[in-house]
Structure formats: structure tokens, C-alpha cells
Amino acid sequence: MPQIKNALIIGAGIAGCSAAITLASRGVAVTLVDKQDEWRFQSSGIFVYSNGLAALREVDVLDEILASGFGIGDGKNIYLDHLGEPIVDVFYPSIGGNVPPILGIKRAEIHRILAARLEALGVGIKLGTTLAELDTGSEERAARAVLSDGGSGDYDLVIGADGIRSQLRGLLYPTVQPRNTGFGVWRSVHQRPADVDAKVMMMGVGKRLGIMPISDDKLYIFGTVPEPQEHWYAREEWPATMREKFAEFGGPVRRFLDEVSPETEVLYTVVEEVAAPLPWNQGRALLIGDAAHASTPFMGQGGAMAIEDAVVLGRMLDETAPSVPELLRRFGERRHPMCKFVQDASRQVGEAGAVEDPESCKARNAAMRDTAQAHVDNFYARLQALREEERAI
Image (cartoon, rainbow, N blue to C red; front, side, top):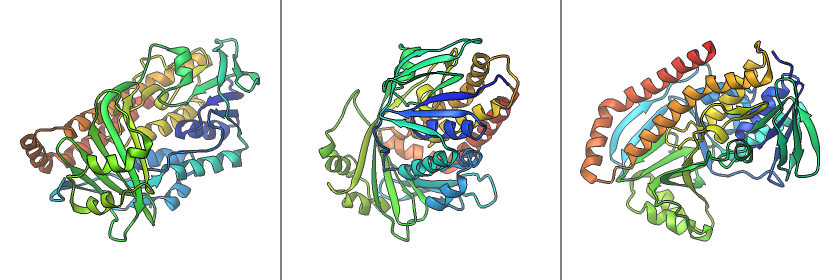
């Protein structure tokens, strides 16, 4: 392994925190910077499937995640139509032991747990700080970074984990920009009634709406709708607009939609993708997570792919490579096939859920009864095959 004594990580989201923990636990002196002037994270939920939970185990925070989230012990995902009529139940795989196949958790809780692990490792964090200048270095020469607070330093490794609008990606590859997918996603957080203990997906006409417990006392609902290019809504309009967008939905989600008010935690985001071509590095600077491969949310794999990036990079630090730039080039070659597969699969699921012809929706729902479980099984089998191919590169 080329010697990496110190690293600068830009972005303290899931990808950046996971990478910082992975590197610091291997003795690398990590400086983590984030543009936020204080820790603030979206309070909506996220669900993590088995591969993401396996990655969190390697980051050494899984026990805390399991304690703070809500696991679906049998991995059941209940599919209904928009009125609440049953379509099919599917079951997701587990990594074994006491780890559930699906876990829901508040995003803020993930960051709280990751932040506590960073503190325990003594990772230096600079908030309200961005990258001002960067020389990406070379095989023989460290990277040189100047920060917005006036600090500067030489680093063996610089990681851009700064999300879909990555500042580092803008410096390295300015032509790579987020692509609007034509979808918007709505989320709201509610008290969890005791009878809601499974993941539910409701398939409407052109829309999908889900329910997921995220703790013993909270759940969130999340819905996707086709949206015109660059369409946005004023924040104060979000509660009323969310109710309007999903007004035709009944069944188990109706009571939560009726609760949505100006006092409800509501979040709206435009769904975008980033598909940075290889290489993901220049010199000693590397892109990971959404900065390199932001995906649509339809497979629930964006966070998992980011954490896996950190885990794979950590493993590669234990391998032999002639130089840091070569190690980073190999990292991109390992991760690109899996991340592209997830992006493509997620996009296809989103397009299937966006069918706007009622008769075609009926046919889709009928087909799901015969094919939905096979699609899940094939997806995770392919992930495992790609993981084995990844380790062979």
C-alpha cells in the first residue's frame, strides 16, 4: 500500500463521515470539512437494506443504528394499489444474525451516530468551511489544499464526498452536472401507530407512495410524482401541495396525509442523478458517494452505495498499489459497475411507477404478482455477483 498518513475529506454527509471513520480507524489523520456552519441534517427518513447494513457493520456503527432505527424483521414489503387494495407481498434478504433485512431510521439519527464515532476517533471537523484552492498532486507529490478559513496543508489524499452539487467535482470535472430525472419526491414525518410495523408501497397512476417506520414512535411517508423540468415549490406551500399531489390515495396512508399541516415535518426535493465517467480521481483527489454516482431513490440504495464506497476504499488501503493515484484509479474501476447497475435498476423502477395510463397501471400491478419477488431476488443476486467481481479487480 502507498503510504497515506493524512487525508482531507470535503463533505460531512453519510459518505464523508463513513470515509472519515474508515480512514481514521486505520490510523490516517483525517480533517473533515463541511460548508454547514453547524450540524444540520434532513429530518426525514431513510431505509437501509441488507447490503447497506453490512457496510454499516464494517464502519462499526451497526449496533447503534439497529438500536435507533426500526427493523422489519421478516423483510416484508407490502404492495398495494393507490386505494389500498393488495397487489403482492415481497421479502428482502438479510445478512443473518439479528440484523433485519430492512431498517428505517431518521437521517438525523444516522448522522448523530456517525458524528459520535468521529468524536471517539478524534477526527478534526471544520464546519462552515469549504475548499478554496486545490493542487491535486501526483504520484510523487502530495496534494495541496487551501481552505476558505485561510488554512492550508499538504495531504496524501483528498476526498470529495460533498454531494450531488460537489464543489470538488466542479473543480475536477466541471462539465459533469446533475441531470434532472423529471421526478419530485415528497416526504413527511408522523407519529407511528402500533399497528404500522411493515414497509408499505402503494402504486398509483403515475405516482408511488410509501410508508416506513423509522423508530419506535415515528414513521415517514414518501412519495414520487412526475414533475416538469426545474419545477419548484415555495417551502410554505409544501404541506398543502403534498396533500394535493396525493389526494387520490386512500388505504393505510390516508390518515397520515390528512395529518399533514404547516406543523408537520415536510420535505420536497427534485430527483437528480449524477453519472460521473471514469476516472473518479485526478491525482490524489477522489470523488465518492453522490458526488460521483447520485442515484434516484426508487431502490433505496443511495446511502448504501455511499457507505460501501467508504468500506471498499478502506479495504484497498490494506492492499498493494504502486501509488496513491493508481489506487484511486483502481477504486473507481471497482465501484463503477455496481453503482451504474444500481442507478440503471433504480431508474427502471421509477419509470415503471410513473406509468400514467390507468389500464397500463392495472396490467403492471397484475404482472407484479408474478414477477415482483423474482425482481428482488435477481437484484440482490446481481449485487452479490458484482461484489465478488469488485474484489477480483
